[in-house]
Length: 443
Image (cartoon, rainbow, N blue to C red; front, side, top):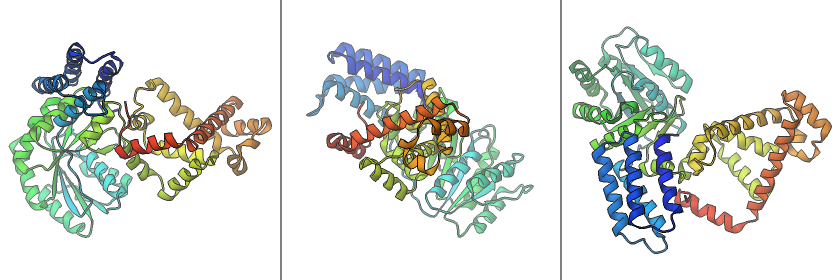
């Protein structure tokens, strides 16, 4: 998960509040110290960390909990609100016809991010064209073409051409009937005058609706000065932070960029083309604290599941009908949504399983699907008929052991029992709907 260590540290602090017999000044001061330590370990600026924790302490000691909320819930809510505050307001990206100019230094992940962005808009029903405006880096066009082919969008470029404004002008003409045009540009090792001059000339030709600065989260607090320098040069409208999945300095990069006033619009959370998320501070902090992010989960699910199929599956489950075909479709959709760790974080179950247990569960789900691929249609529709001789045949066909097939059937029966219990529990259904509407699961 994004900023794993920071999230774990803060969640441990919240657990300390939840388990305390009472909320007093001593506990609040202890919590504030833990919070300061967690933020500093994540490379958040010292002054900002102190400012945030002092505000948490002030509010926790002076504010009365609102009606219906306990003192514990109130303190946790204060921490959540103050963390959201340092990341700024969310910036909405409208799904309409527009031109996007990508800028940034070398090695920040600009070209890969251009491809991820193309994938993001394409999935939302817009036509996309990529323009290869990096005329200095060897094989820049080839890299962008390879990514474009993977996404399934066209790319315009002229290998060998050294005038970036010329390529951009021709690319805009080439894609004049395309909804979204994304322009990749050259980087440099530092903010040289030559880079700034070229970016200004390209920006003038592009007349872009959006200018996105791509920054590597591993630069930490240096992300702030870089964002400011590019903003002064070409007026950036948003920042995309890459490599936020494994960066100890991610907290520094997030907070430093937010301090400049440049909105963070997307975050890169992995190496795959789908690993780009729209940045929403409230959702981000909610997941970080283990509260879940049901809205993002539903959005991700809608991208990988056919709406009619999803509705049909939900109806069957609610009515208590659930066979192995349904379970197979459920597992397939979950696999498409990304690593289980990411899905569990959206559900608010981030600390329920260790990394080893998560990997084991992922492997087991993969094996279950292989086993189901060796079953007949009749067996999938009516698992009750799968007895000893069929188990042996299915095991041979899937390359698994008979006990693996029995484990699958046991898992299926447990799932069916749980679904049956849920479908008959109106109170539980109402609770779930309430949480879905609020977009958060309780800690």
